Amino acid sequence: MLHIAFDDTDSRAGRCTTHLAFRMANKLQKEMGAQMLDYPLLIRLNPNVPWKTRGNGAVCLRARVADPGRVVDYVRQAVEEGSAIGAGANPGVAFLEGEKIPDRLVQFSSLAMRDVLSRQMAEKVAHACGIRYYTFGNGQGLVGSLGAIGCPMLDCDHTFELIAYRKEENCGKPRVVDEHRVVEFANRTFPLTFNSYDPNHKRILIAPHGDDPVFFGVRGEDPAVVESAIRAIAPEEELEGWTVFRSNQGTNMHLQSELDLKNVKAYTAGFVRGRVATKPVAVEGGHVMFSIEQNGVTVMPAAVYEPTGLASIAARLEPGDAIEIGAGVRKGTTKHPKILNVEYLLVNELVPVFDVANPLCKNCGRRMKSEGKGKGYQCERCKFKDAGAQKLLVPRERLLKTGLYVPTPKAHRHLTKPLQRYGMEKKGFAKRAAVTI
Ligand code: ATP
Image (tube, rainbow, N blue to C red; front, side, top):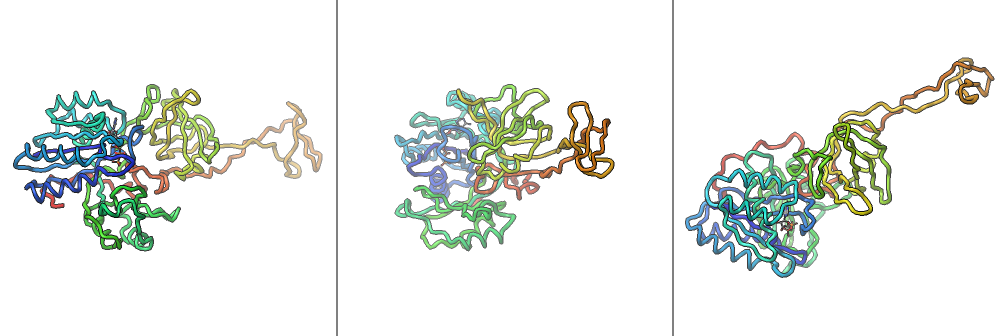
């Protein structure tokens, strides 16, 4: 068994790591006798890594091959030739032989989901785990490659994405996708597909906008439902082809560890449970800022950005509310400290909130006026005086419900778990069997 992974083959100017994987998997299977043991894996890593091109995705192919040496030579060359080296890509390609994925590699991958790791650390792990690797440019792609190989994707939640690719001559031309077909497909396949369309903003989400070869990508719960998109969307444009990836997209895999706010590092990701420490304030741009207290001690600012659609929800929080947030840590600057960028908000408990009001007149029921500090109250209408009357605490209706709030689909990151997937998580992937792609 040979595990093949690569990353950082693309730049903003074009190319695409999944496209290379699509072509490579075809060639391995059809021309080199490889037996694929899983769908090609599209593994999304820490979305807060500052040098990512787009969605911080890496790919891994797991196959049974007769001549590993020949496959390694072909893949190394394909990555070198198929990458935008010199134009921003810094590819890394890695090979692991055998069934077992070493624990140290699994740990590295798990860290790569939520932390920033160095190329040096990746090299150490590669040597310790007997991984053969090649790097080009500055070689940062090795981190993503190991992150992908080390993510077994067997005992965890996962999703599928069908990605359809354009012919080379069409790359750069506008993509024509029929909105009605997308809406119809999204409605008909709900809840088995997700993030095809954002009904709140009437926006198609399956097609990217750049010059890269992806025509569209459709995400869902099983291979059959995402494959059905080809006929349902029926693009006019002739495609190069398509393939189905298995992925950690839509699973919140990056938010599974609790952040320790005492020692939190920039660019890391995770969740925080605590209480709202300061009243939320709206700032320019419609964003909302508040702070969260962890373990009753450590307080840190949190930001809810307007495009997530969660700012108006966060604005209704009150100090003392028990919440959990999924968050990425924004780097501090000379102007502001580190900030938690909120990715979901779970409201666990709402504290009662009171408004302070003057007492009501015992004689006529009208609200009374204070006579001065410690001098009691007088009714302005009937002039009734009450020296012993006290201010009243009037419970204010909370315009917020406990529960989970996630961003609107158009603001989702690749790893964001859509609301509809809560409760639909898969426990794992059945034993690796040969897969024809
Ligand atoms: P695309 O989504 O189009 O594939 P991308 O967003 O994946 O592009 P890359 O060009 O792959 O962008 O760049 C991401 C870079 O960050 C790669 O070099 C990858 O190895 C590296 N990387 C990924 N995860 C981490 C991490 N946790 N720590 C440090 N580097 C990382």
